[in-house]
Image (cartoon, rainbow, N blue to C red; front, side, top):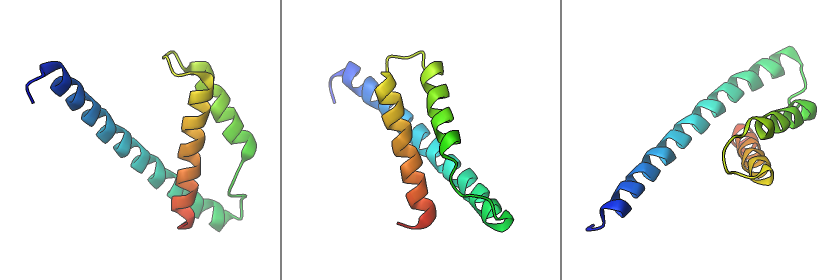
Length: 89
């Protein structure tokens, strides 16, 4: 590739993608551990109030250019994805 800006930007994007993948995998492992604990303790597996509170908190703490709708959509997708992974769907 002869365009240095393109090469540098792609390299940075690749590093960010790997970091996101690592973080999602770490979150999945924590949720799996929590899932096992909840099943063993007879606790509800899903807490809708907690999820809404999480989304509200993330929107409030967002100091980037991602819109409120974007924050909610991104994290709702992550939560849904992790639920599917946990339940093997």
